Length: 130
Image (tube, rainbow, N blue to C red; front, side):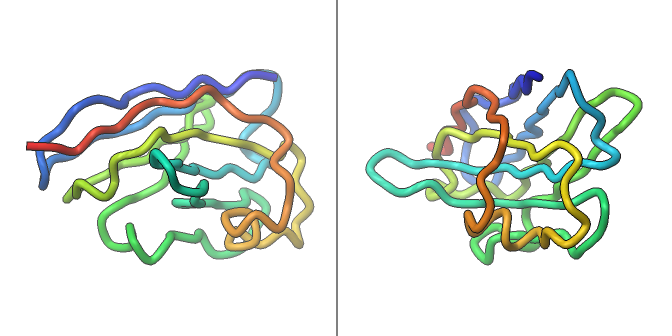
């Protein structure tokens, strides 16, 4: 099982980036996936999570209305579209997965850390600065 995150970079405030997480070794169609971020000196934060088996996609209040999580099962890829970026969005972003997730796992529980994610990708740095 592997998760490969990419798409980070340096962007000005108000700009956009799209992060990609290519997965292998399992299918997205029955998995729970999350994007998490960790800024320097801060705790890890669940940004957006979903469970392909059900539940309402979760977004942290800090990104709601600006970020959109999506998946393309044909490409084994999960995306995080980030618009209206702010300096406080600067962090290392990671994708993580629970393959064959239980249908009862609710997305907000994933992002809150109630469940241990089975697999993590390497991080991709996002820097928002003028």
